[in-house]
Length: 107
Image (cartoon, rainbow, N blue to C red; front, side, top):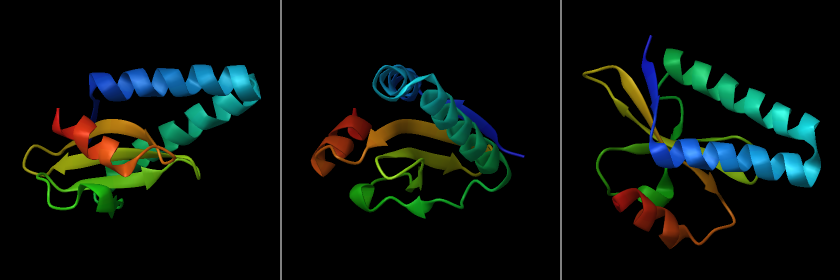
């Protein structure tokens, strides 16, 4: 079973997603979103390569993959197979400019 590691940026985005969801849609919706993220994280522990290769990050190394949380947000991650570690790089709002994702990941 793989180990899941969250980058600092991903942790901040996760916290912001919860706070924004709570303020805009209520506590129940924010909790459901958090539960969905936990489900995806647990699935990545078992099946780390189930996400689709992220088309916005095509050509970058390592191979970035993504899993949708809902229509608006997705988890962007990569899998370090030799060490059996899933690194969650970002929670991406799909309404943002696609070029911004590349810029964020390269930093």
